[in-house]
Amino acid sequence: MITPLHYLALSATLFALGLLVAAARRERLVALLGLELALQAANLAVAALTSHYQDWEGRFMLLTLIAISALELAGGLAAAVRIAARRSRDRL
Amino acid sequence: VRIVTITVLFVALALLAVAGACGLLFARHTAHAAAAFLACAAALAGLYGLLDLRFAAAVQAALGVGLSGALLVTSLPRGEQSSPVRRVVRYGAAAVPLLVIILLAMARGRVSESALSLPPVWASRGSYLFALGQQMASSFLAPVLLICLLLAVSVLSIRVLLRSEAKPPPDRGEQ
Figure (cartoon, rainbow over the protein chains, first blue to last red):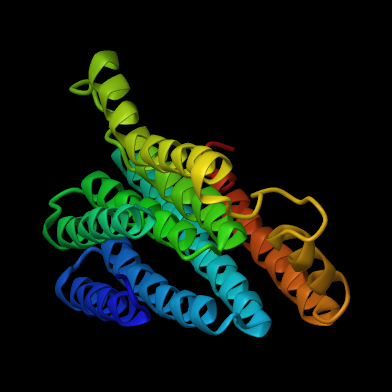
């Protein structure tokens, strides 16, 4: 039987791994992905508690958090494109 | 049967998420890190589906998986070493977690229709999505509009960031 505690344990594990990635990796984009992973782990904890308590406000907060984390990822994507364009221009 | 199925799915998706996180930690190339993050995003979308948060699962699958897939494709090396066959293999590997999520959703929908009598997935009256839409248009209208405004501003900012990079600086030395 899967309880919210299982989700919370998984969320804590992913959060710790995300922070570890952000602290240990030197590449900015990978560090950003680590922070993104930590944020998504927090989203998972919110989702588990929201589903357990059947709370509408928590569901909207979860959707907001998912949208914000996706925007962060889009910002990372833009940064990646910018860095790649700058590198190719420097090679020329 | 349902408890065993959910337990097996939870363990599989949790293992996929932790494996993706470990892959993110040990990846040597940005494309590998993006592929690992793609696996994490897909596993989280599946976990949202297991929690019966179908709309959140769909948003996570569309935004998280889609954006990390785009990041993966963008960060692939574009040198002479990457042949078209290798590119197709890499794109296919990037699409595998998304296919897993779609198959899981299809299997869950089939099970819910036949044996488990779960509520319907899509927006018939009285369903989860119908209630969510009602709440979005009534109680939570102001925060939803504010979030939409913030999202639009952020997307426009990213667009301006990319456009300013695409413009080459004027070269006055030749004149």
